[in-house]
Image (spheres, helix red, strand yellow):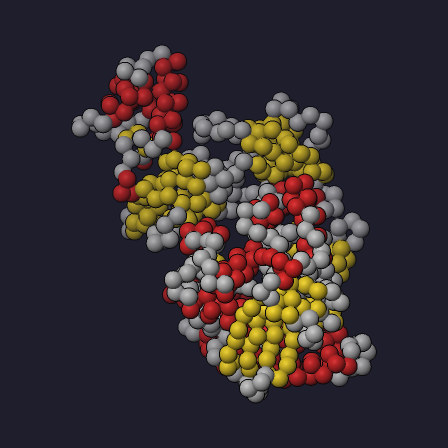
Amino acid sequence: MSFDNQIIDFIKQPNYLPMKQHELAQALGFTSKGQRTELRHALQDLEERGLISCLRKNRWGLPDKSNLIQGTVRMLPKGGAVLIPLNSEEDELFVGAKNMGLAYPNDIVEAERYHAEWSSRGRSSGSSQKRSEGRIVRILERRTHQVVGILKKARYHCFVIVDDPGFPNSVRIADPGEIEKDHKVLVELDPWNDPYQSITGTIKENLGEASAPGVDVDCLLKAAGLDEAFPDHVLNEAKNIPESISDDLMNGRRDLRKEVIFTIDPETARDFDDAISIDPHPQGGWRLGVHIADVSAYVTPGSALDHEAYKRGNSIYLVDRVVMMLPTELTTKICSLNPDSDHLTHSVYIHLSADGERLGYETFPAVIHSQCRMTYQQVQQHMEGENNHNIPELIQRKLSILYPLIREVRQRRIRQGSLEINTPDVEIKLNDKGEVASMVPRSEAKEAYQLIEDCMLLANRVVAEKLMGATDRPALYRIHEEPDEEQWTRMAMELNALGIPVLPRSRKELNEAFALAADTPTEYTALLAILKNFKRAEYASRQVGHFGLAFEDYTHFTSPIRRYPDLVVHRLLKSLENSKSPTLSKINIEEIA
């Protein structure tokens, strides 16, 4: 009989009671040191295969499948973790530091649920209550293979203190080479199968002295598994895409190149993925055009570009650099809606009344020719009646129509319950040493920014409604659920502590709290008290609405150059318009979300 079968057969006996490792060794007659070591390895292997479990007080027995839960480990800074269940119907589960087993941050694991005794002062006897906790019994999938940290050298060994505060321990390094202490390093982790043994690893890259400019940002990127540079095969695929528009790409597109279309973006922007137009509607009112770069025409499912974009998820804007989702050949040239050149778009026409009511819409693929690139500062100057904005006369007339119309759209949205959240916007500039040189509030172009924001919200909303209308097809939505009772209560307590006498239970009462806090010393603190008690907005294949915006249907459509979900929405919309079967299933979309 094999060693493993001998253990399992013994544990399966009807009269078996869970035993500790040394008790099992004695019961099985394993007396030598070698046998006891072999038993320890066998128990760990059987546990990893889900055949046995390490139960309370380190006793071994058969797993109780009814009490097992699978999920993702989210480490807590002060120790322990929260298990996020793979089954969204199950509640999150706290796992204490002593019950973490062999788990790393973000691992997918199987945990055993049990009831722990707790009092108001923590674990205790006496007047206590029971609450569910978890004990990790098996690693299903390792998600953490590399870590970043600072190299330290002791007398007889070297180790790396990991930057992630949730990582279970430091990592021993056998040979640091010529790397000096206090340098940040990227470490490849060795397999870790024994909680009584040290975690070990090999240094893969020296990131530089911890205090050197830019090293802190390099560490963040490496820890997230991100790389500014694109693989050669991805770059080659991007370089092989012609800048000129072929006849095949023009097929089925509406030609809008003679329309007056323009872009409004930050002064430092290099990729322009949205443009707008405004014209009289044949049936009265106005026709607002929102024209979004058609990235899906160039980044096709299964391509190298698509795989890399999916892996990155979105462009990341850091204090000293941008990590792009797609190579610059696409983001600043082929797809970017630069002025005075033809570009492919997926466009939305929205029929608006003079008082901002939405009367209808249509979506379609198009080709445009942007006539003007403007900055928020220029548009703000024009809105305020200044004359040094250098905006062409024709565009000025269009802007003069757009301002009051979109102001009506915004006011209508707010009247319907949308939250008025005004977060501070600050531009941070660094010196050559990577230190903060200045922090400048960016509030001077607020109205110009809101103008574009509301145009994009309109486009996102109508695309979501169109996808929602096709009930038999999968879709990707941007959802934001209402706070739960505990969050509402905690929010009220924190607002009251700041002297804001509101007990919010609705968007209307939240807006009242914002108004009471406006222009007071506690304005920003009150904003944080509210926002930190919100549920996080997320992507989902189900539509439950967007609490903050007060929209029943909402998605992300307007930034496919820098957000992968937007690219997915473009593909879904295009397949719907062409009456073709969607290339993605609901399961695919849930994986993307």
